Structures are given as structure tokens and as C-alpha cells.
Length: 90
Image (cartoon, rainbow, N blue to C red; front, side, top):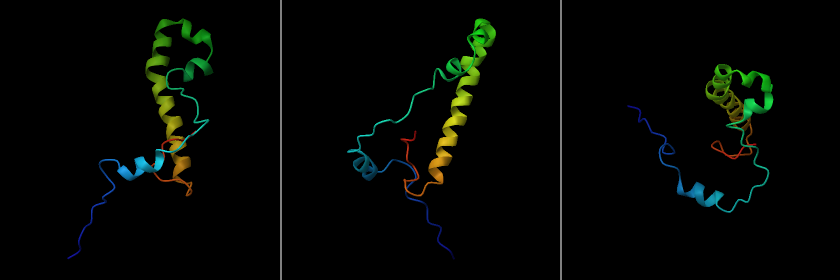
């Protein structure tokens, strides 16, 4: 009978990870574009229409930010020099 071992790294974050990352003084960690991604990339003319502006800022902006963040995590996944749960990506 095979013993199924559960991965012990799931669940609460490790205290060792916190002590490992505590001394990091990172610069240039990227731009926080969660709220204004589409405002900076699309024309202001699109935001003059209240219905379209609400759709772009409330519904489409979080989707686009999610897609960009997933592309960053794929970059980290294929980079063997950083830990797999590295969050400070640019």
C-alpha cells in the first residue's frame, strides 16, 4: 500500500520565508497600475461617455491587470534562479 504524502508547504506561509526576505531592500519594484492602467493607455475620448468609462474602469481594467500579472508569474515560473513563490516581480 502506497503512502500518500501531503505537501507540507501548503497552508500558512513559512516563518523561514519571512526571515529570509526580511533584510531585502529592493529598489525599482515596478509601477502599481492597478487603478489607472486603461486610463493611461486609452484615449480620454473613450472615457467621456459615462457608460463606457464605467465599463472600462470597473470591469475591463481589473481583467487587464490580472492578465499582465499572470504573464509576470509565468516569467518567474520559468526562471530557476528565484523561489517559486517570489512575489516581488517587476
